Image 1: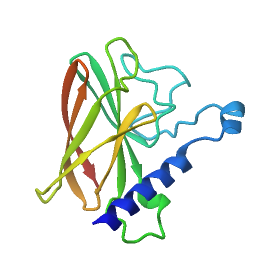
Image 2 (image 1 turned 180 degrees about the vertical axis):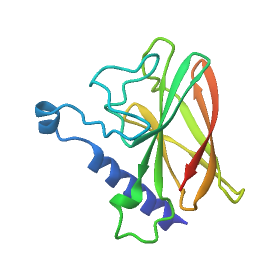
Image 3 (image 1 turned 135 degrees about the horizontal axis):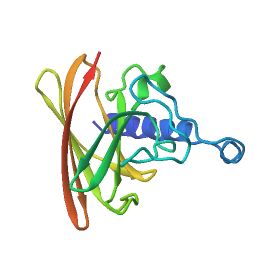
Image 4 (image 1 turned 135 degrees about the vertical axis):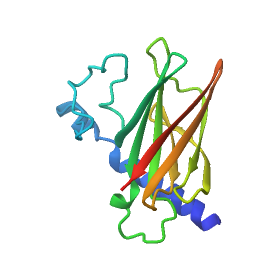
Length: 169
């Protein structure tokens, strides 16, 4: 069990290190947002109407929602792309949630966790770590099918609950 935790932590740190731009890249080039069919690129620094600016967020935007005046944006990082040589990795993805308060500012002082219901009905319960103005944790999305992702965010003055389906094809 210790070995799995250590390997997961090392892989997460490795992925985060790879995803952070170098100071030279930040100086010479703006953040790059990779468009998908569902989420076209927006002008850098321009948040979508009522939402967040995702140009600095890692991973693919998979879901956005509004809960009690707060804006939640979920990003998914495929760790298998970065850890091809590590076949025994128990976790396949890193799930991030970025929380924006009603005032438009990032909520960074909170605790967050996920309850992921797998396609076979089993559950994954994970606590997140605060990182890059968001909250992230490793999850296993290896099986094809529909997952139900539930998030609980406990900020100093508010508790937020959110849930959405995510399909792995």
